[in-house]
Amino acid sequence: MTTALWCLMITALIPTLLSFIGGFLRHKELGGADNKNPRQQYAQATGVVSRAFAAQQNAWEGLMLFTAALVAAFVSGVPQEQLATVSIVFVVARVLHAVFYLADRDALRSLSYLVALGSVICIFIMGA
Image 1: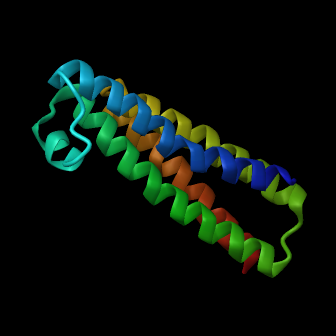
Image 2 (image 1 turned 180 degrees about the vertical axis):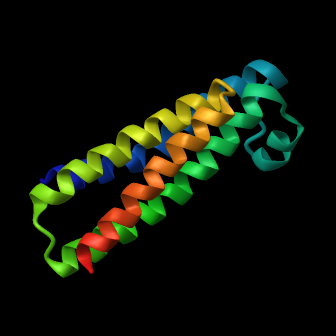
């Protein structure tokens, strides 16, 4: 498997990990996890629980963009060596984004988001 595909796998695991973190924190803050209406329960959450849910949603959105960019790059025949570095930058930025989201560091979160978005744009340009 190429580095870019490993990065895609890691990126796909980020929202799942955030889901587990959010579920643990939700149980801790709200006294349990309502699996029948989890989104309604998350609407009642505050602080880190609310941020964990928002980070998870944002991670799913980032995964879609990264997947689309990699598909475009693979179809266009972008050399794997070129994709590797940009893909690693994307993953590092997305991991930091989740950490900064949970830590309530909004400026750093926004910066890491922009780095990840720039990586996706770079991959699309490489495939153009």
